[in-house]
Image 1 (cartoon, rainbow, N blue to C red):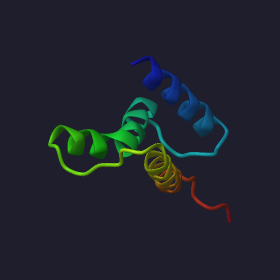
Image 2 (image 1 turned 90 degrees about the vertical axis):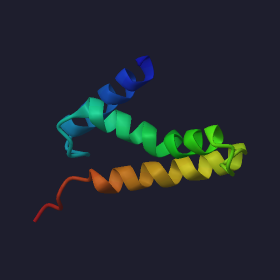
Image 3 (image 1 turned 90 degrees about the horizontal axis):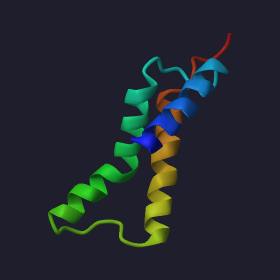
Image 4 (image 1 turned 120 degrees about the horizontal axis):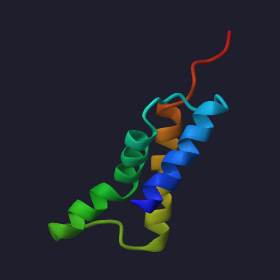
Length: 78
């Protein structure tokens, strides 16, 4: 919960600076966390292959963060 609060605060500040568009920082923080760890957690619980090395986890986290930032990018200025 503390981590989610910190991430939500970071997202809220990013929205305030116009870097992201999102009006529900708590939901966005949960979505980001789910994107990074949710699928592997489920796979691990079901005993199916998952990203079990630091390198694989880091590459996935980079991919998830990139997708998140693209999804919540502010509209282009005209």
